[in-house]
Image (cartoon, rainbow, N blue to C red):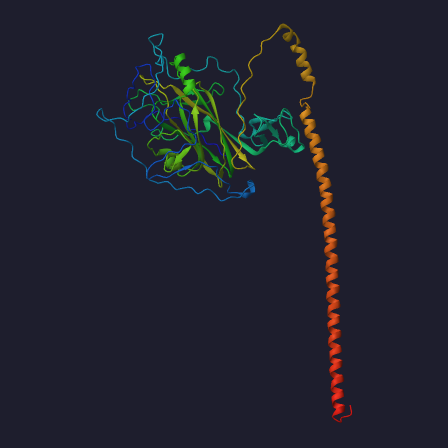
Length: 526
């Protein structure tokens, strides 16, 4: 894939049409506002497979896209037909006046002590985080994309680079094998050779500086009245030469777009890492409530572009959602051609969110890829212009998969850590000895289950060999019997034909004898 240079952010901020004014919610300033009327209550779990039914509008549920290249897939099925979306661009909504009636908002449960905490000093705290206190002494040189380490082989413990193929287990957590170890059948830990794996030909890692944002009208940095911050740039601690682009998610539905890379032909599965950060004004009680109920929903779409100019400049009405149903004519369907999408619920505790693609989208020719992230039902403060959460797309990993099945199996999530056991002095004393014994032991332990499985495999192979010998003997006997039957049929046919010829000769002889006798009676001497 071809990386694109990141243009410098434009200092000018173009104004947008103003949005409808925020409606105060019942319950006092300590409540979070409820989502719009088109959404269900965010207190309930997301209805992942629930369909939105709209009169006079078709919708379809997501399914995996099939392969366009049979050499890279086990199954050659017909491609999924895409319904072409309308090319007309809806006009922005007119500015709302004080007399305009906003949409009704259903009440939510009372959330105590969720109002912003007043600052300790009179000077307001800046919205963006400050630069790191100490910069690294030696700047790490830039690593080429094809030599970046994406995984480590769990058998030989060697690094696996982007340009190298690997095999990823779909039943073990974070288990990868290089090509050499997979070919000789090396396994370690709890992985078994019978586990289903997927063959990843190459991996493309896209960082924040590889993304190209659209025009300022699509994702403005500030609101029209300059009181809300939508986007801020902060220095990256790990890479001082780069900046992180944080998007503040306010209570209104919105979305962001990025032009990511140019994809080469192949079948791609995506893995996104999105970093979430909560507002510092949230109280502990508010954080506890958000951990139980969540912050809202994200809908992520990644695929090839329909029209690059339309992707960079066109604006659309924002959408509300809580399920995996993607209706015709929505933003993702209008801007993307072959794409994958999913809906996730933002956790209330913040931190990274890993999103694995459960299907593969094909790319026939080198095409540009676009990323669209929509948010809906985001919780917001009752008063003030500060956002409760901000997100940052840390990286996107595109896996070019050689063999895949439908639906695509996704590796399991990280298992929860076991609770810490109460330590005793005796246990503390024996810990170094246990570590030394563990280091001396081989990495792979043989258990009774492994021995039983090996015995069963040997018994099965012996039984298969015996059945194969019996089958070969039966086939030989059948062939011999068929040959004998064929020879008997040929001999019978020849004998019948000889008898028929003998009968014909006997008939001719009798007719000649009768004719001679008749001529003698008539006085002819023959």
